[in-house]
Length: 340
Image (cartoon, rainbow, N blue to C red):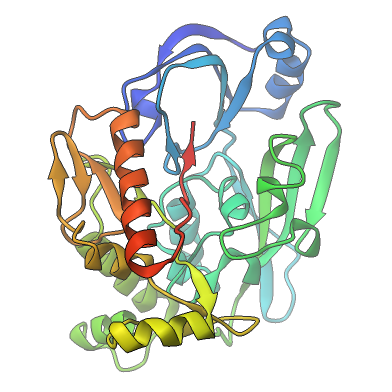
């Protein structure tokens, strides 16, 4: 049985806290409900949008169509080897809950991805990453349902075509599939701990940790994120609004002549990754407030809604930031957030 509601307020379903409405709304808690939905007249005749945790989306207006909220739940262990085990998580699980499950069970691989907002199903779409780790490094497969035929398909790691905050689900098969579960391969021993980021090293030192574990790394990341990033339950936001851009080495060297302190990190294909937050801060946006919206005071990558802002106001702020960074540095930023 599938229940489709009408004229539903989406404010509780997006972390920006934007007060918009959906013409139709339904929640999928078992796969059979999706099968029923795909054969319904409303689904066939209306525009539709799959919604996970709503932590990577900006609504600029009411949604004149059907919102399909992912609510599949469940985590189970599979296929254990001598030093690894697979973890299958349903797509509606909160990502951070999966990280906590892994850490509590002594399973390594995603501890650096602690406290990233959103659901498990959205993680491979974005190829989420933080503090030197991306989900592509541990992902084994993605189970998905074709929204046109209802057929089930398993995408291997290679078939996901991962890139920096990119995957096949954002391009070739965008909006064609409903992700039902994600399977990761975790380590049970001999964990490859990643403490390369200075912020993690400094935090572990402050915690008096001399021999890091997956638990202490997770705790350190949680502390860092809570310190630097606003809690969306208190201040509406969608985390990092922009991707970190990559530019040719020649462009970076030109910028060094006028901005000697510009940070840059080697990337692939003779490119340099430049922190978008630094660029935005240099343009004077960090901490700037315009009415009910603004740029977070601790992290310039994060645009915030202080309570009554609307999506168009935030979108306009983003466009103004894009223009100023382009003008000052000749660098084009790309939004990480899905703008509807």
